[in-house]
Length: 121
Image (cartoon, rainbow, N blue to C red):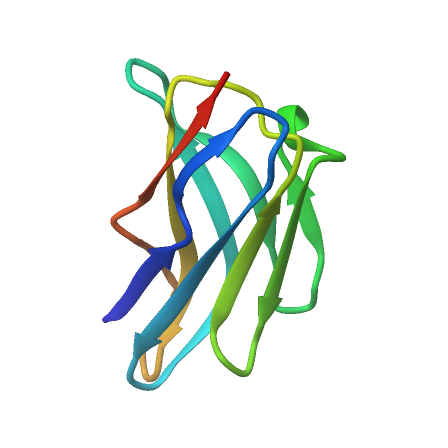
């Protein structure tokens, strides 16, 4: 199993910045893609950003130019630097990892419990 733990959420004013972190832990695993998703109450979960182990990045259209995803492969961590934050419906940001356990031929999706980001207007 792979455990993901997010940190860095909280309250920020509109236009402000926030940095989210996610740490993956477990035994004998490797991670391909790590990413961030968000879900506001009553809304579908949406991709915020994702990054492969090689550093290729993909962003949701609504955050392009404002958010930056990065990762530290040695520490099995992924980060999301958010700037110019806009008031939204208090979405929960969740960390996702496509990880493969040793001896198992296919990868699996793992999720953190999420961290709440509230942007005040």
